[in-house]
Image (tube, rainbow, N blue to C red; front, side):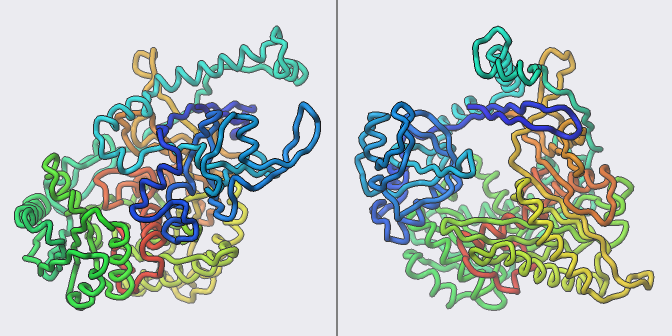
Length: 639
């Protein structure tokens, strides 16, 4: 498919924005997909909470394709109180009358489709026009994208990658083909309404791609304490053999597993400990082993009986059966009632023979990350990032997550040290129907607590600069976010009474940056022979006014080296800046922060504080469903 939008970027003339889209289409209808995911519950038992949760999990926010006319929609809500037997009014153009019809009759009359299940719920999709409402029948729709079952099939995934991750040259060729087709359709010689409109407006259509200026930020050095190395292609996996900066030492930890895993347990645990010692210089003492076979019934009792204040971590091996419910019970207990860092590994993972060293390395790295290492650091202070970190600076990530129950949770993560490697994090539920006001209140509490933890960590010193990265924003949210969230943080800063190191009254600056991870903008860099195009290099920043925002500082950043497919930039929009950051300083700081996410040995698409906020909101919103225990707020328990 393709995406087309007409708009004015920066201070340039109106431009047509064209982007191609590739989706993997499921062969089964949505009803069949939901039914296959429910082991014991009828998908049409719509009053059952488990069935409702699965419908929401599969549908909310998903992109679907209608099987009768191949239209693409994104699902906004699942209506369990509506069925295909419901009626709606429609305007019949040929007869020029308004008539009432139900969905069963409509699809039979206009698409010759007979709906089998008349009691299925209806899906509400996002409409193109504000005054419209779009309802879809699940039986006549299919999901797009990859599910867990598909990802396990390597042959399928390899073939799918070839189809969906097209090269930059292929993508540009397709886009230019679409543009040329549009140009032909609106030529003066064509008897079309579009051609007539173009003549009346005295407009022409140019198919040449817009050229913009870009630059590549300087290479980043990753520091492991004793040694530092230049990051190559946005990744430093090869340097991990030199060990972590501060590896964790596990002396008191629990290992819970089902009886079915006993046969392979010893060799897997020995391999885990060997990897941790040899590759990461991490010491792992023998764990306290606990057999728990019926985990759904017994996991909470086992934790209550075995976890003590001295327990550093609990590692759980869980079989596939009931794994989601077990995961929820395990995380709820360990995050709220018996605060402890936890790690969950599926039983099928320990039986994998292929790439076992890579799997074990990821597990060890994640365990280390949860204890706030730090595992490595990047130099954030210097002329390229000034005024940030030339004085005490706090970086903050804020994000939102909507779960299957349509509940919205906020995520908050604030750095506490000069290297942005230690964090205070929190998450909680926002009041339904009053999300903006609730976010303002929660944010003031979170910023206040973060400032207190920062002062304790830094001998009473408070941050002079706060740099906030706010995720999940659309342009329509900017005004309301400025009025609630920016003002909420400023109120907290104004209320803080203190004295700076220079003896002046405390007055911190605030820089608030909106982050749009999903953007249809694509950039192509000419190859050396200029006969083809390739992806821009990692660390490429584009702030040309031809593609920027009017009157609002903004830039695009490509953090990662992309081997397959086309690079997707991240857009950053500065909504508030009392520190008067230069564009270069903010761009360099944003780029460097992308290397400080300890769950990945390289750069990610967004700054680390925002990714941490996203992760804690996701865990609390999906599994825990309550605010985490205070003892865990200075760990990365949510990774």
